[in-house]
Length: 398
Length: 56
Image (cartoon, rainbow over all chains, first blue to last red; front, side, top):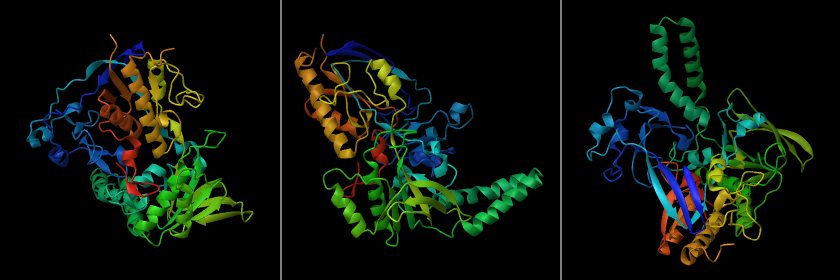
């Protein structure tokens, strides 16, 4: 959205529609273009655990069911000769000349449902996220567990996924270094290859998992608030991991387990009884890594009153729910107030009403919420917006 | 003149649910999403608690 004005019952908005460079009315989403596209790009939907092409869809079931060209990577937009996708497309849907456009809208009400951003765990360097391949975020874990994900649901350690990809590209790099007579570089690459060949497949599946709770939330250095859904999220991931591989052992390092919600406490108990999850009460101080790339966690076990360490196959961080970065721009445009954490400011008695009449909010834009609550708020926000439409804004105008 | 349409910013689970509800009431909705596909974070989830059902 680029422009916004007006008041309840008659807002005017100008929306920037980005070019897809694919004609949505012609594309049948057959995928022939992406199959032949020569440009590989790290797939951000899977957090770089695999590659996508420069013409892509986020995921197979994605709606709208239309491919999109990423102009930052597509060869044609880099001034090179290519046009492979246009040749492959039988529907003639590829249109490199497509331009961005602007859509003018007149609406009675607005709902802000901009969601959240995952807390950036590199801000807590002692946990090693970004440095150690087998320390991952909760959403990366989701992609590893997903049948539609980069490993087709096999719980492979990211060091294996990345190591295998590296092994594939190394011979080319070594050949190039040798051709250019860069002997030092070539020997370093050869050494890397030898190490990878010996180590990558030692631990093909992650079987001993550690979940670190409250990464960035309930932490006075970052977010003071509780992120609401992470306890349940980690328990769920541990249960699913066990469903995939019956030998899986999971340890959940927590301060408090806040399993508030219908059926949630029972789910936690089921996790321990049926899926063998172990809940360890204590804060993790540091994560290190041994020579096999296994994360080693150091933590205070408050039940045993001692400091312990544990070597794991993989560590999954329960990243906090941070306000989305884009919300500041959106809020400025709409003229709505944000709270001290950059979530949309609301009144406790009217949790979906923003500071501007006729603009409502729901989901994680309003604050950290789990899915059932987000859905409930969304239906409620829809009802509030419908009130405005049906009364022309009279019912809510102040 | 008063409009009878609604603008929703964000096509995640909350935005989609609100859009569906309003649509079912016969109200025209404009759903604005910055990514190529709707679904948001929830589309990245594998299964959801407490039933361990698949998501979207």
